[in-house]
Length: 434
Image (cartoon, rainbow, N blue to C red; front, side, top):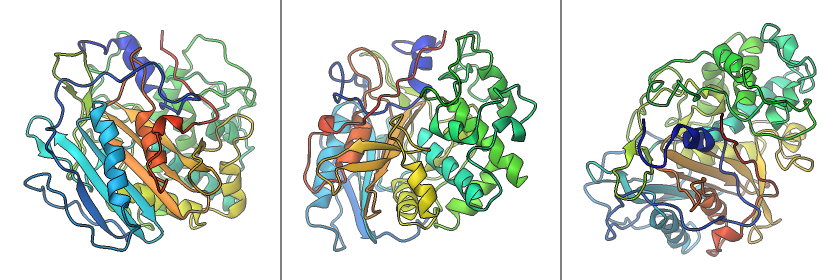
C-alpha cells in the first residue's frame, strides 16, 4: 500500500480524469508539498530560438545556471515564464518545464530538479508523461479519418465494435465529446487491484472496456450529459484501429509525430519506461514522508486516453499545427471547438484568459501518476504554451489543484496575471471509484 494521502480511494479520485480549471480558481487552500523540494538557489534554465522540429534531448547540465536568450522572442518573455514556473515549484513540484511559442520562436525554461535522488536539475527539453493531453491527439486522428470519408462522427460505435455490448445509441461524437454515458473510471484501480500490483501489468483495450462496463452506477443516455471518462478515449483508439487496420500507435506516429518533427514524442503502451532525458515522476505524500517515485509503470491502463510521452516543444508544435490548419479542415476544427453545450468540445476545452486576443484559449491538461501537465493555444494559432511538472499539486482537501494548468494558460499573456483568475466554463471533476 502507498503511505500517507494516497489511499486506493484517493488514487482513484486523482488519476481518473483531468484537473480541469475551476470556476473560482484554486479551491480550498495551498497544495500539500512533497517533503523534498528543490534548492532555493537553483536558477531557471532558459532556452530560446527558432521553433523548428524537435531534436534529441541534450546532455545533462552540471548545474541549474541560467542561459542567455539568443533570439528575438518578445522582450521579457523568459522572465514571465520563470515567474509563473516559480508558482508551481513553490506550491510543491520538484521540477517544472514551461514553454511559450510565438509563431516561429519558442522560449522554454526549466525550474527545480528532475530527479530528487541525484538533485539533477530540470532542463527545458526534459520529457514527461502528458496524460490526458493525449486525448487531443487521439481526437485529431479520429477527425482525420472523418475528413477522409472513412468514418462518420455520428457513426454508431457498435457498428465498428460490435462485440463489446455497448449502448446501440452511442456514437463516435459522444466518445470524443465525453457524453457517452460511460462512468468516469475504467474500474482498473479497484480492490484488490492496486497501482502497486498493476505497475507492470499490460491491459488490452477490450479488457479495459469490459472492466469499465462492470461499473454498477446508472448511466445517462448517450448525448444527454457530460462526464469525463478515460473509457471514451480507449474506445476511440479501438475505433481508429478498426478503421485503419493498424495499431493506434502507428497512426499517431505517421499522422502527427513524424510529419510535425515531434522526435521526442512517443506512445509506449507496452514499455513501462520513459526513455531519454526526462523528469522523474513523484506522488506527493503527507509532510515528513519521502515522495514516492512513480516514473516507471505501464501506461496500458490508459492507452489512447493518456499514454503519450512528450516535451513542451513538441506539445506546442502539435497545437500550432492544429490551430493553423495543418492537421484538419477548418470545418472539423470548428467542431472540435464547439463547447457551447457541455463546456468541452471534441478533445479540447476552452479557458477564459482575458489578457489574450479574443479572451479565450483552447487545449487540454492531464494528470497521471507522478505527472501534471497542460497545453493551450490561442484560437488563431499565433501563441501556444505547454507545461510539465513532476508531481501532483493537491489542495487542502486532498483534491488535485488546477494551478499547473492555470499557469500554462497564463503563460500566453504578455503580463503575469494571477493564474487563479483564469477560468474554464465547466468543471469535469473525477469521481471516486467504489
